[in-house]
Image 1 (tube, helix red, strand yellow):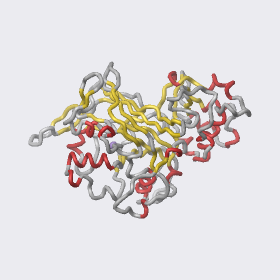
Image 2 (tube, helix red, strand yellow):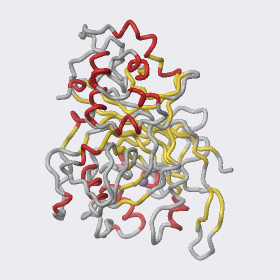
Image 3 (cartoon, rainbow, N blue to C red):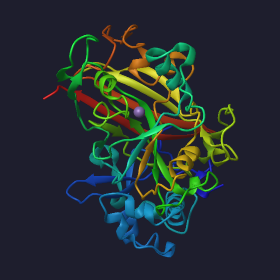
Image 4 (cartoon, rainbow, N blue to C red):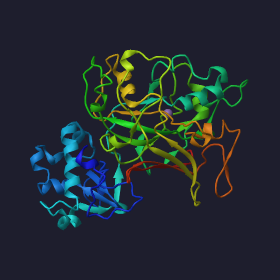
Length: 422
Ligand code: MN
């Protein structure tokens, strides 16, 4: 077990029981505090940890890396140092913040390197070069296939043999808190009439998680399932905003385009794959048999609770979905092995999202499309209002956390408010 994962460790920083950031988490992000330049931070309880200050005071000296990486506006250069260093930093933070550790008394410096989280601005954590979205929840793919094609043959023949995905757009991925403008585009509301232009009428969220690649590969190289975890730095919560009416008209034959690339929202904290190690569980039995390059050993699914809330302007939020990352038929290791099996190269900071994560129960459906069953079953919010899709002024708030042995590892929130079309 990694030191930082030890559930018995307590910190001298007060951490409430419902915090996303106990000493066992120590995620990484980019924050801007006051008039300082953005830099690399971690989190504990209600505080952000400024790694620059700790670096300047020599706390990482023996780890033998250039602490200037903490001055950068993205995590990419830090991540590129490799897991030996990044895990070393996480372990070191766990020592520095540990109540029982006597070699340093970092608590004397606390006012210099701990900032109240409420007083800093969290920025996009990584510069995302390329972004791919998968379609790996069997329940989601089945629901969509049932609604739009044939309930008898909801899954297309390829779905059970490979992790289906498409190349998305990295430039429009934004950090939690960034407003999302309702997209405009072509739709075809009436089957027998020509298409029309205007604001999207069927705006939706997709509850997803995404992993961030931490290791570069060369063009022509493949990553086997055995090595894939070495290439995954960590994870975020991901909202793949979707304009269903635009998507429906445009997607044949090449797949999602303008119905997807107007914005995606991620949580600001990257939780390391190592912090999630205790939450690994077995995945689905995969039948029909998969090809050897997709076979894997050990537990590669994760038990991570997910939830989505809708908060209308000026009102309280209503939780509309409770799902779990364990409902992934194709796991991240298989996704990465499949993505590189043809020699496609990856760069540090590339992002792969899971696809909408729906569970078997209708309360675990990860999109309004499924929750309202194409708009035929409107949801009733706590204030009595109903929703088939997302309205202007609505904020969609996604959260994720994993809990075991009294340790609760959270991701913070991925939240975005819809503002009217221009
Ligand atoms: Mn998606």
